[in-house]
Image (cartoon, rainbow, N blue to C red; front, side, top):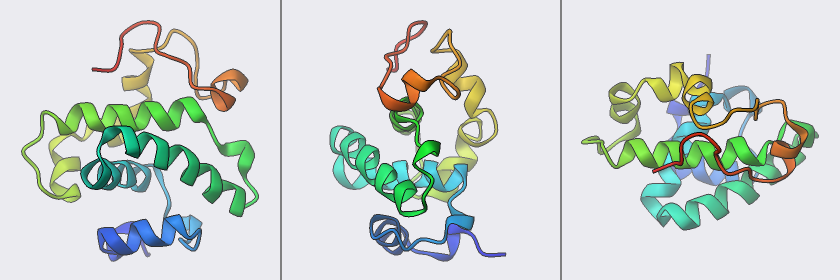
Length: 137
């Protein structure tokens, strides 16, 4: 079975940007890795802009624009950034091992920030909702 680790960071980013990445390997962990790559390469502010527009383009290229969720996308990048500030890792494999909650308890992490179900909210899908319980730091 193929996964996103078969690609270097540069190859992975390029295929995603060009909407040629096989959708079967773009799982939650791959999404987290893409955020990690963009934050490292472009900084948090540009990563937020890049991933918001690029993820929307990617899902549209698959005919799955209804799957796009602006709040989850931006919250994911902010969550990755939060853990990167506490990390000693210099590659994604070590980073995700160091912070497995990003992979295994992601929904629970975001539930600490929001009192509504942002994963199924039509408003959260189309507009970024600021956290109403805990801010992202």
